[in-house]
Amino acid sequence: MTLDAELLLSRGPFTLDARVTVAAGETIALLGPNGSGKSTMLAAIAGLLVPDGGTITVGGRVLTQVPDSPNGRAHVVPAHRRRIGLLGQDPLLFPHLNALENVAFGLKAHGMKVAEARVRAAGWIDAVGLSSFADRRPAELSGGQQQRIAIARVLATEPDVLLFDEPMAALDVQNASRTRTLLRECLADRITAGGERHNITPPATIVVTHDVVDAMVLADRVAILEHGRIVDVGDVGRVLGQPANLFAATLVGLNLVEGIVETPELVRMPDGRSFVSDGELPSVGSEVSVAFPPSAVTVRGARQESAARGPVASEQLALNAWHATVGILEPGARGIRVTLRGDTVVAEATPAELLAERVSPGDTVTASIDAAFVTVYPRRVVVPAVRD
Image 1: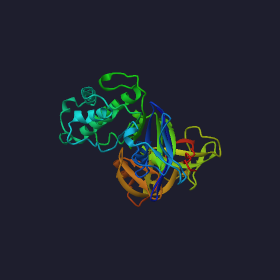
Image 2: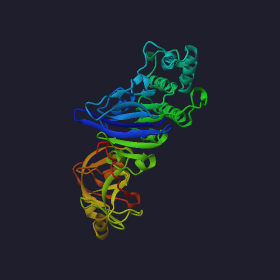
Image 3: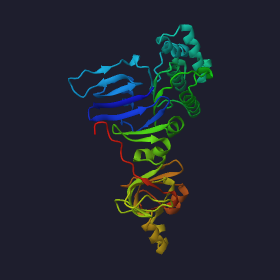
Image 4: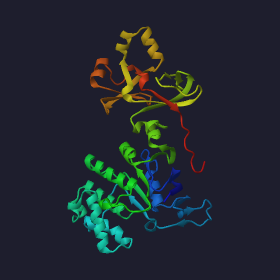
């Protein structure tokens, strides 16, 4: 069943003003900085928070409807009657029940007979790889094992909507990979415990995550939430491969700057820097985003630069190069990460490269980028807010 949520919710200085639509069988990964409103959105959809305005429907059934008028009457279906499964970072298992009874609890609450619920629960525990732990209570399980039991519990009830808030956060790499694969099979192929296929309507699913792997493996689309507003939404490859904002770019390990196509070969930034790319540019006058990995940024120390000055060095400085001041050096994904003061651009280099260039915090350097690693694409307009 399709989930359609239009939400307006204010808490102090923060306002969530966003709309999300998820079709039956579709999974959207919701990404955004801490404090952007991701968990608030899930809580409102689940019925744990009542928004100040907006409507939430699932398959046409109205779950929440809060009119803009203060005199209007709100309609809010209680959380336990919504057929929505919510799993947060805390497994929230019942401490007095063993793993089997924890998974069976939701099934029994929905009216399934005790014996049948236990058989179904046992199948789900086996599906998450914990069949030998079925009789253990939460205190006897590791944090990762507790989360896998919680995932089995929420999937076992076959809800109309699934909401996951960082579902793999408590798992180690191996268990996260196993659980991610299980979720993909269950969400995409409607496979339930024991590998059985059922003619059930697949759920609409939202996965809140900070892990790009989760988005790539689980999601059909990605939505970027920032300051309470969805600023970009679309195909995973487009949203993450051609990021529209700095958060998304940082998430996938890219630098991002914006400019205007000045000539068929040249992009000019507002601060005067110019960039070229080996790829074809959009039409002249277009507002564009320019993305490139930190590893493509070369940092040359002032002493090395002065020794190499000449016609070639001057031309390189005019295109894809600029003078900068080194901020801090810190560990990076492939070496040492070099931040530049007053700039969003970062570089990455090996310790040997930085030692050879004699680069230290506070030094004036020349930063340059290989045009082969520069991607230029039309700048995307921010998705309008619900109340714009």
